[in-house]
Image (cartoon, rainbow, N blue to C red; front, side, top):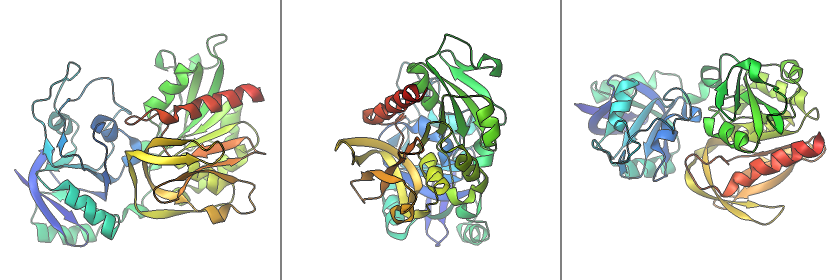
Length: 370
């Protein structure tokens, strides 16, 4: 079946429908990773976005039961050059097309994804629509829809009720604070959490209590955690005034570590600001320099906003890491408030494991503060 990818500027790409059919609109972004499509499809930070995968063949190792990062598919749509119908891998249970159809996610294949990526790099992020309707009518329909920046996606991806994650994975809330089983216990503000983050903490002997993004500072502290994690998530951090206020009230009470959106939330809580990047950072090979120890790590990234370093003047926060491609802020720290954060994904699912050391550093900080 013929499908069209329509951009808000009137550009039209025609290809073949992949997965579910019907209209699906979102901000179009691209990811340059060669692998990890299953993790990308279940990453809540992609909520409200149509993801273009620039690697030309997607789905060759299939879909398995182990690499999901959340309970559902998160993007608004998927764009690939070619989807593999007959994957080959001992863990594979179905093809990527079957997954999209099963989970009712529209996609399109048979288009030049690298050309689309070039257009996004040149013209910046914009709204797009995957559709089977007349392309000209689709342009008018798309231009009548709200933009990505006008929507708040965190409330749609955060957990609806608290839960615990430990050595055995997800568990009932009553399992939190079981004596003797864990070195430390942390509270996680879930703004769009990936399961791999919780798995990394569990591997380090840390039990996580996952709380909705709407939890108050008092609710977080009532659990008496040893530390607090600010999770990744989708959308504009400036819209999350309630979460920012919660973080502000938590500053100095417990060690705090922020990842991706969590980095931006910490910035706002300290009095700083963020801005939207032209086309964002999404891929598995972004070089980042740690200004405190001089090391360079290759990182996995997925974000469309960045911290304004000038806005941190007078807040007591210092920039600790920068992106070597464009000098954007990749980490901040407030030495007096036990708070630090990084802009990329140290759990790296998908991506290199270079930055997993920052999980270890946070756990060591928790131990020093107890």
